[in-house]
Image (cartoon, rainbow, N blue to C red; front, side, top):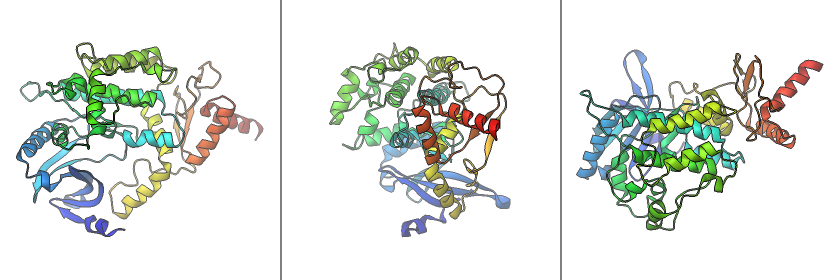
Amino acid sequence: MAMDELKIAGQRFGKYVLIDRIAVGGMAEIFLARQEGLEGFEKTIVIKRIRPHLSSQKAFVNMFLNEAKLAAQLNHPNIVQIYDLGKINESYFIAMEYIFGRDMRRIIPKADGMGIPFPMVYALKIASSVCEGLYYAHQKTDMYGNALHIVHRDVTPENIFVSFDGTVKILDFGIAKAANQIEQTRAGEIKGKLSYMSPEQCTGKVLDQRSDLFSLGVVLYEWITGFKLFTGESEVAILKSITDGKIYPPSYFKADVPEAVEHILMKALDKERDKRYQTAWDMQYDLDQFLSQYEFTPSNIHLANFLKQLFSDELDEERRRLLARGVPGSSGPGDRDTEDEVEVLDDADIEPIPLRPRGSRPNGDGSGNRGSSRVLTVDLKAQDYEALKSLADRHEMAVGALVGEIVAAYLKFK
């Protein structure tokens, strides 16, 4: 353990105990922490501590406090919950919900690095959950029924988090506006975020909920096509690309994108916001309609197993690290015996292993007829899964279908 980690582990921070520093940025430090209470009560949380030099900027502090107070009123399954807002010494901080998982900025590259195209249906499912969280925030009113007019302003892959139980969460509602304001003053540090801004955000217009939907459209376009929509050698070039550049239909880069999905993306990405989706509910409805009629509709279980397969090389190490620091429940989400535990789902018309060649049917023969069969969802080591997938690809069949045939053959001749 490095010396700076030793200093952090067990350090008292007001009523919290810091466990580990997760990340450091130009604006904030993020810590895993423990909240302690009576009779041995413990709760694992995340502390986002604003860097001391920003605490001297009154305009930033006021904006941060206002936005955080608004975000603390949001209580939705698809939004990370803010528990506390305070100031200790010279640093303002937010205490928020701890989620065991990964953000999409890490998930997509991880899949690419393993040679696994990120499944389109997973991208759509995640986007649908983001829409649900955004709609709740956009429509939020105060106790007197007055609209709060909340706009996230920073819908990017790093602010979309997927837990290892398959739950999708939106991060950073609390400081989106404040962060956007402070980062605009730092030349050369905001290219990544610029790439997901709406045209009206780039031109400094008053924003409403439709700006977040454009940003989500950019994110979803990138997930499905593997192509980054707005790029440039400078901030000015990126801004010009967003406001004036042509947006090619996703099928231009990926020919097998279904027509309905292309329609959803192009509507979300309309540069005229009056022609865009007007609410997140409208966009979610179209996403869910497509998923309900598609050959495979993923559940949270599928998404969870997909993530566990992707990050199997990291999960054991992360759990050991958390246990060593005394994190409550660190043997919880995703902590399963991958050698011999299976999960049985009765009479479920779902694909047992979510990765398969696009267009293949759940049972591998094109009929889609599964009858009343029972489904086994099996956790495999990454190398074992890749070996199975390689064999299935050679025979032009789904991994699930291959496993089914192996099991059937064993039961027949055992």
